[in-house]
Length: 363
Image 1 (cartoon, rainbow, N blue to C red):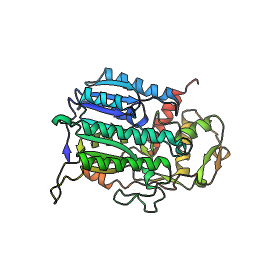
Image 2 (image 1 turned 90 degrees about the horizontal axis):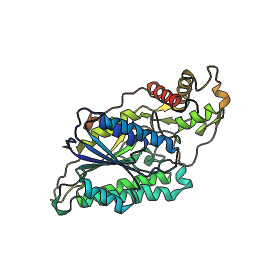
Image 3 (image 1 turned 135 degrees about the horizontal axis):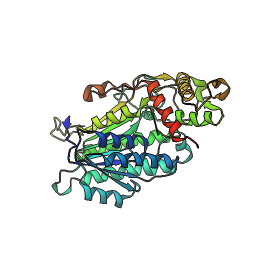
Image 4 (image 1 turned 135 degrees about the vertical axis):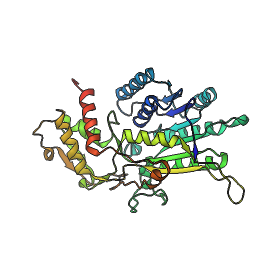
């Protein structure tokens, strides 16, 4: 693994107003050990979910940048725009690129597949092409491309926990298929052009200012409004919930350690390519998760103290594209980067409940 010193460099982070990317940017700007970094973020600010939350995240970044040793620049646009992306690469000579922009959501991919092909496939292709040409003219170019994959690519695999060494060739949603395509594209570009690249398969990331389409957030909205939450597979699901601060820390560690360029026995370049699971490696029963969430929402006054959860839930069959269990084997990530999440589930949900109560106060 090649160590990368981020100090004094330019970093490009896509999906900057998104959940994971915004927390990663905050992590970088607030890190006293990282100095004189210029972070460039891009986001198309689409209305897949409440844009006010994206704007809130960007305000936090602006505030952090004002107090940081590093600088911040935001660009509104699409990563599928070749002219825009190529222009940014030519202007900034990015040392590290982190592609977190994506059209997310398993169920929405059934409704609007075009959005997934544009952002997740064409958009990532534009990033790969820009990385490829960053070496033109003998330039040092991109030292490390880190990109978001997803635990969804494991599909209905019966091999638990999910290990990156095992085949994941049968995704059960279009979203998952686009993420698997990203891994394949990254490998091909790494092999052909020696772009050091690392894919991260995220497992159910949650926390304050998260995505409203995620279960914990949508459950909260529904319960607050007095509705019934829809629990699929009759509640017989387990999820490997991972707190967003832990994820941001893990991504930052990965950014600073790139796969090395090497040659094989045939004297030809090997692909400087790696994929890791990034999860809590501790699945939780969905009904237990909902119980803790409900208690924390009662604590902050979003729900009444005598709230009857049993009267506000509906048990349903499994939804198309969903899987019953997600469980990350994170052995490789712990071995190579010394990373393991540390935030207990209740603490993470408590921080979400505190944020939710403050953000929606008076609304």
